[in-house]
Image (cartoon, rainbow, N blue to C red; front, side, top):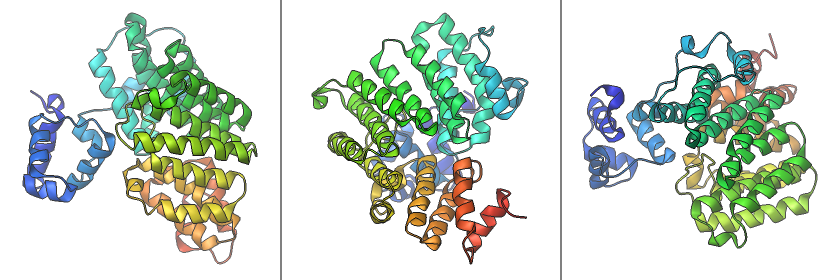
Length: 392
């Protein structure tokens, strides 16, 4: 059995030994029991939550993808295009490439693409996506039941394109995901999350609100509490997107109403399993409250809530991408109240969590530029301004 074929528990054991740690030492650092570690390593207990894999990887000082045994396609497999141009070319291909990868192999590539995205390694994701899209479309053409993998691939593509300021392409990818999802309310709901994000990036708040609310109703018809936990979480995520869209449109009352509704859902479902890669839970709801306050211009409320939520235990369990993206927004709250030092501090924190989130996103460049205009400029912000080409 090769290294790539090892079960995840065996990989945990191998890296634990390499780090010269006993099972008890690993358990202590994770806040778990020795029995829990032993069961994981023997495969008796499944590691199926990203947050747990991330915690173990951090203790073992390795990338979570190493534990999952995944590899992105090499640049030679991606095709002629490079960067966003390569992804644009892949989206423009309407024929299905020859050759079909197995569902298991494709699943591993899709999982790795998500993990790489959640670690904010955007350049790596963009390079891998053309080949991944071709593989997912080929698989779906011969096995329609592989729709979930193709929808996930389009969702990753949409998410990273929106990050990089290509919201129109992001909308296209999200729309493709909706088409593949068809009449499946859960698949369509996950795709609608991407549609909502893309439409918000295009300043189409009313459209985003309509799409996400409609999808939420399909995912979990009322009473929502009667739906499965996974469906409730997806419904909550869609309603959070709707709330942010309402806030961006200036509808404070609707935004508050929707966030209060999702808070009740989050209380019921907690922050458990995340099969749809949506990171929904009580902390996500509180982060949305902060962002909604920023969008309606209530910087004081946003700063107050921000300083409360980042003290919560669940904050550090969120993926690096999620935390850093939120902190870029939080920097805007400090700017609204005229606190340049606070804005700079939060932005530097975001850069420490996920550099690409700050250095590659056009939205972050705008915040850096606004902070850098103040005098004196904090050293960390001055460095960031130089790194992104705003100063010489």
